Length: 85
Ligand SMILES: [Zn+2]
Image (tube, rainbow, N blue to C red; front, side, top):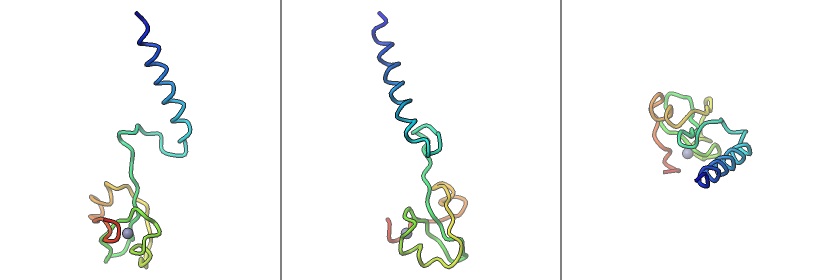
């Protein structure tokens, strides 16, 4: 029977419609959704922040940069901010 196929197609279509409402986000599949964090780009900085208005980040005297979580951990060798863990 063809009964199952249209239902799956319909659900897929619903997801397609829903994804249209988040078009301000990068159009990546949900599984590989990128998390962005904020870091302070100075020599003494060691943390990354989920919250741009975090009091830890407010102490930043240098440039505040938005980076991916994986870059913050890897490329920049940052750890989660003490106020946010
Ligand atoms: Zn923080």
